[in-house]
Image (cartoon, rainbow, N blue to C red; front, side):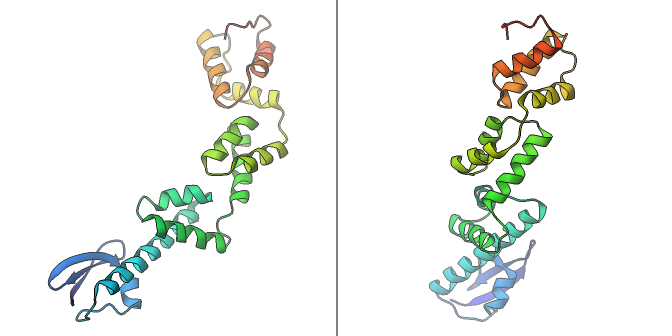
Length: 205
């Protein structure tokens, strides 16, 4: 087999033609580094190897691009990379990011837990659930949440004051209860805080 043409494409890709027919689009820099030039004779093994190297490079570039915007957990990062890369390349990219210290699940979990606590006023139970959804193992998530200093009633008040101040409206009150339960708060704690706004609070919710 002979490479008969290489045409530049978008996103740093090049279309490779073998024996006059389009074969595959590959990372341009990978082609250059491995001297895949027009006129070169290649076999199936050469082609499979250059495809693998191209996929791995693009997976690493995608990982770096994603991490330049914000921190990610390992699972979250791998899931995003796999939208445009194969499983093996995605895993290698994530492992490399971890080796470089750019991905650290415990560090991510701490920062994300603090964000959920301070911006969404989420409960410990809610935070632990969200951390596991991001790929943090349950034991680590629960341990980090145990370390958080949370005044449950103060957090519930913050949610109410931010979005549900008109508790005299029955619909608003029910929405507030539903929202607080989604954030992981228990009914007894919700009821206790609601009673501060309405001394006649009952068990109807």
